[in-house]
Amino acid sequence: MYWLIRLVNTAFMIYRWIVLARIIMSWLPEVDYYNPMVRFVYKVTEPVLAPFRQLLPAIGGIDFSPIVVFLVLDFVRRFLVRLLISL
Image 1 (cartoon, rainbow, N blue to C red):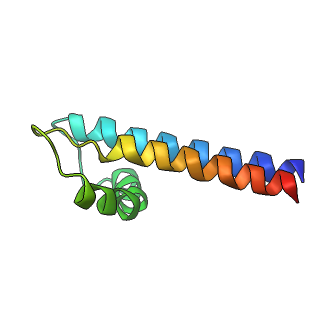
Image 2 (image 1 turned 90 degrees about the vertical axis):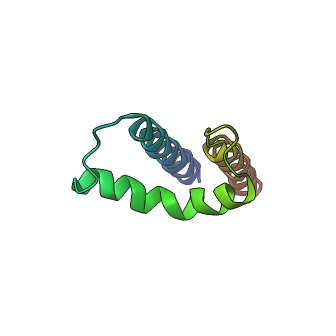
């Protein structure tokens, strides 16, 4: 069971890094959006970020949806780990 908890933690950590990469790419002026890696990052993160972006519009041109996504991801990760521990 310990390996499953590690797998869940690792998967969430990797996804957090991908979201962070998306944030950094949004700050860069010369990102090649046709690059397969950039398209992968956007394809993987957009389904999660879009609903939060609709709930929390940008304030002063700053998108706060990634912060909410980080908080929700951490909550879901903790919930899953506690659920796995209780099994």
